[in-house]
Each structure stands twice: as C-alpha cells, then as structure tokens.
Length: 271
Image: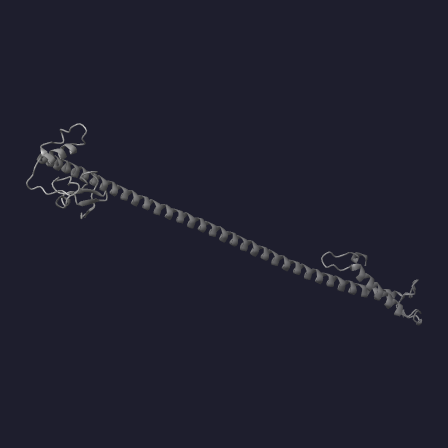
C-alpha cells in the first residue's frame, strides 16, 4: 500500500487517501469475520500425510482468512492502478488537446498579426505613392504653366519689338512730313534751328506768320502741328493733345507733340 502513498501531479488525486479507504474496507472485512475458530473436525488421513492444523494468529485470523485477504487485495490494487492509469491517460489526452488548441490559436494569431501588418504596410506604401503622384502632377502643371507663361512673354516681347519698329517708322515718317511742312511754310528746315527754339517749331511758326497764303483759313485756337494751315480740332488719345486737324487725323498714327501711339481721336468743336 505504501507504494501508492504519493501525490500524482498529473491527476491531482491523493493516493494515500485511496490507500486509507482500502485499509478501512479490509478492517471491516476482518471485523465481520467470526472471532471464534471453526469447530474442530475429526482428523482425516490421506495417505500418510495429514493436513496441517489451523494456526491462529494474534489477531485471531486463520490462515484461510489471510489468504482471502491477500487474494482480494491484488484485485483492489489493480482497480486503483487501472483507475489511476485511466485518469492519467485522460489527463494526458486533455493536456495534448489543449496544447494543440493553444498552438493552433497562437499560429492563427501570428498569421492574423502578420496579415494586419502587411495590410498596414501596403496601405502606407500606397498612400505615399499617391502623395508622390500628386506632387508630380502639381510639378508638371506648374512646369506647363511656366512654359505657357514663357511663350506668352516671348510673344509679347516680339509684339513690343514690332510696335517699336512701327513707331520708329512712324516717327521717321512724321519727321519727314514735319520737315516738308516747315519747308513749305517758311523755308526753314529742322536742321537750321535758331537759338531759343525747340526743333525749329518757333521759327516755323514765325515764318508761317510772315507768309501770306491766299488759301489759308482763319485759325481759331492752336494750329495743326502737321499742316499748320488749319486749326487743331482733333484731340489725340490717350495723350489728349489738341494738335491735329480733321484732314491730318487720318494719316497720322502718333501724336506729333509727344510721339506716343495714337489709338483714337476725338473732334472738338469750338463755339
């Protein structure tokens, strides 16, 4: 019985308690047995050998009762060992099942964690790619805008060059007309200005005032700076100089006074 007085770590069953229960059962069987020895029977002879007499022990148990107890005890011990083995097998199976479930659960958790990490990484990469694509699109639009602006500036520059050339031509034409007007008006050219005059304008006016033209009209207000025979009744725009007559307005593209471009003109009527 002493070999069962150990604590099973797997089953959690106290084998010493089971041993005490077995001892109690044995004691009950011994108590229930008759205390007096069975009545003696006349000796029987079998051949020359006689059966031995029954030997009484201190507990007043006969040899037959001891043998019965020894026969019952292995049966009880075998039952306990079988129960312990069965419970141990069940516990081992339960632990194995739980271990497999735990390993499967850990594997599933690890796989789910890896999938989540991979999904997060892919989303981050896609977001960064979208941001970079947006930046590239903005840079391309900005580059296209700058190219368009550069082309526009180049076109405007060419237009200004053309306008400058046209103004130079108009200025040269106007200068030639002025010289012709000065020559016809008083024989004074722009190359022979007197002191105190500006570009021979005052000298031409003096010469014109001394010359008597039969076709000359009576001037009302300032004279035309081109023909100098009619009154200046046309206002050049946008400089707003009253320097042209109605006859010379259509043939002049610049203001003869400030040489700025004449976009339009307005006729002025004097009362």
